[in-house]
Image 1 (tube, one colour):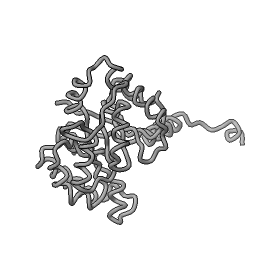
Image 2 (cartoon, one colour; image 1 turned 180 degrees about the horizontal axis):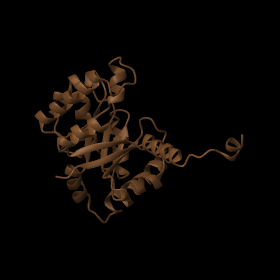
Image 3 (cartoon, one colour; image 1 turned 90 degrees about the horizontal axis):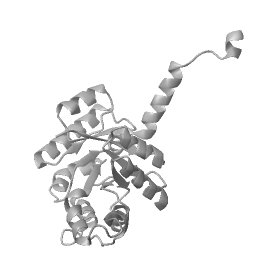
Image 4 (tube, one colour; image 1 turned 90 degrees about the vertical axis):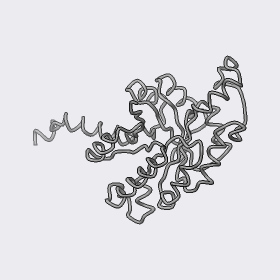
Length: 249
């Protein structure tokens, strides 16, 4: 099975979201944890992902039943739950994302049914396997609880948040710390034992080679803001010449 690669979107721009799909990315995580996106901005970003043929996922700051329902009604294909730490939170997230009898999500029509082209029965059946519920583990508490979290039916995959994990462990903003790497391996081992995919975010060549050797189903390529800034700086360095004023002095 080929690996699906995604990006965390931190630059609010539907045009960028559409471009990511055409660049070959399989999913985009639209961020409601750190970004002040309006409902219209989120809706346009979801449409742009669809147009670029990549899955729109939405990261929410907590297990908010109503918010999860609204982003799914807007067309999100996945919900990423920031800093999930307990099996109880995981159960509530799954129930918020699915319709009865598997969950508590309320039904509506609108764009997710093609404004009536798809019957509600068919849409409900489709969501059972198509909607992804993705815990993001970003604390020592979350790692300790991960075996119980993974036992919750309906968890699609697990993402890591190494930067926040480093802060939580008192290491400062050091996602590459050896102790953090040990915890990422621990997370991956728990996921392997439960048969749930682990989505790593390789931060250097060594990590990239390690995770690719495991033949993963999911990988995060990082955050668009950082990747864009790196590319812009590198291109500017490539074209650096002394200004006329500097050359003449």
